[in-house]
Length: 330
Image (cartoon, rainbow, N blue to C red; front, side, top):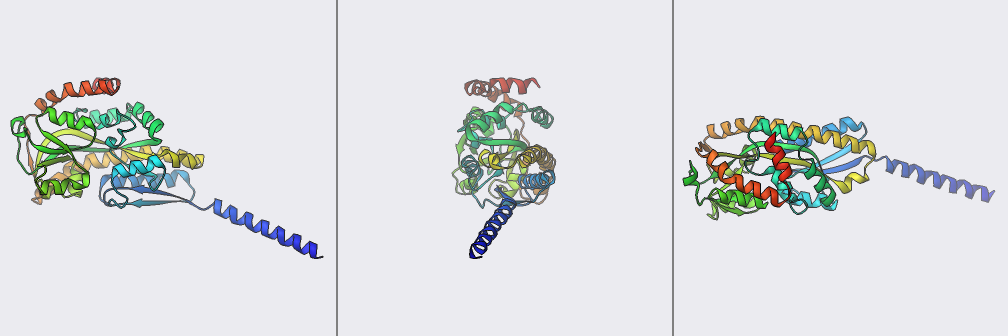
């Protein structure tokens, strides 16, 4: 009798553990995202859209935690976390932060690469950048699942410059990828690589005169307070990949993986539409409020002419000449 009772107890314990294990296995997955910006920024909106689409396509319980306002550091930190498979599972990051793993990655965001927004969208829709995404995935174990961006980048400055002559010697902060320093130096400016969150104080303290960004970035970081002159160089159109940690991705069930890939592409397109459409509106609002003044720039063609040889040489140097030629041919 006692043996029967013991056997029954063991059976109940095993059953209890099995139920507990099943309940644990069915607990919703939680994914963590990161943004340097607040809810109003196009990058944050694109990531929220990504979360909504994943939930829609996956159709099962899943949780997202989006860490905003640089809570987990800067974009370079997010990419490092995704590479390591810790803290951040998805984020929108600058291609400049991928240069350690792919020399060609920063090139897709380089100055004067695109003629206009129509050309930019055509390149992205045609999946022209797939070789870069493949290299980043292979070497960094980070997937580029969509492409956001779309803001036209101009120079915010504490000095007025309307042409190439007045631009000469301007101390300007640029992104860390070598192509940015090379191209800006070719125009006669004096570029410096400074952390994004230090740009405001660097201008304020006279270390530099200027930085460059799209309207959303100028607004979010209040760069207009230290650089109220917006020099309309229109030197680049932003590309910001929506990235996902490969280490995280491999641990997920196949149906969730499929939802993430599908949602990533659509959320990227959504982000491009938002930022490109909001760009002019944000500049209008800031100028109307007296926060900045747009300064027409007469020598954009001359700037491009000075940059073209640098771009061609650099593309060849990093093995991106095939991509560069394909983009120019479109």
